[in-house]
Length: 225
Ligand code: DC
Image (cartoon, rainbow, N blue to C red):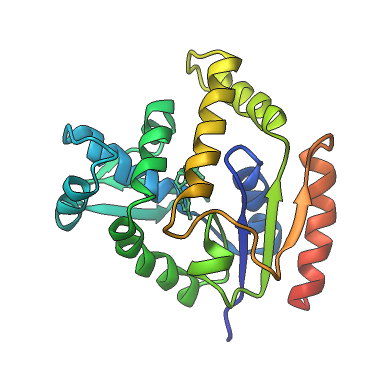
């Protein structure tokens, strides 16, 4: 059987993971959150006491990192670092910033490329990230670029962090989000950008629910299912 892939790219807080997770469930595809992989590298770098922006030192750590991605019985993707489940810990704002910094280092991107491509060779996947439609899976069957205004993304992210018990405030979340947008878009290695053949979905002023129904139809049509 030929496997199929759906790429979902877009800036932080656009609702990619919520959307992709639900779409995957509906389509019976494997959901792959590539941001979580970069976050796990970021956590490791932090734990080693290395500056996340120091390309040479971060690159030197790569051969010794032991990262695993497992899809567990709860249907969710769990991240393991040296055998420890760090799925929750990698969501801390400090790790978000570090992940954005390490993801700008070409050696880090090259190091994680094969893991991502191998998953797409073995399974029907919905993969979310920043460069899935442009670099990781340029032959993806369907490409989605999901976005929303920064203020709206910050509101959603803030609510999500509060729910998880992370203490922060809206202005800090908005500032962090703008910084990460700038970092993810301006970097020279696989910057965030919409693939030419991607479907643009702007969820500003719309609930994810509304966009979900529309996207599901669009994807099913394009996949021919
Ligand atoms: O999607 P996220 O917020 O969990 O991603 C964390 C960081 O990882 C984000 O700032 C950019 C980076 N990233 C990337 O460069 N390429 C990807 N495919 C996924 C994430």
